[in-house]
Image (cartoon, one colour):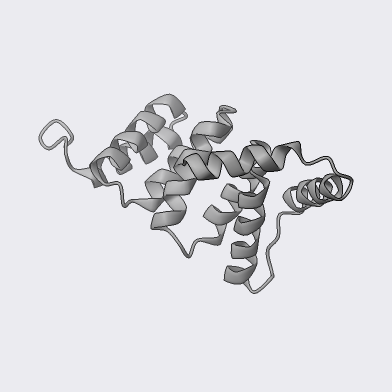
Length: 145
């Protein structure tokens, strides 16, 4: 099907899913990336790109994909939770906190990733102690981006 119509995003999504199910994660990643190139509004494809990058320890790439995923799948608490986790890992603590608030809004407070919350509490303790080197860096990144 992709040979006949290589610009069909659902075909690339299905290909990515099939590759993922058969354990071919690099091929799955390529297929989901291709899907997002053709259909940048596909939040689930962006989320799959992020998930595959998380599995490979590529948190910066996952962060970019999750930012796109949350734009397209604004009501998916799982996507927001993934953004909170990855944001905390890469030092984007304010974004992580905002994403956790969104998770709580979407789930009525029923879901909360405790490890990420603990990381954020530690950052608040640092800020109260005057150790806030991460804050200026995050504000610079947000201003530039």
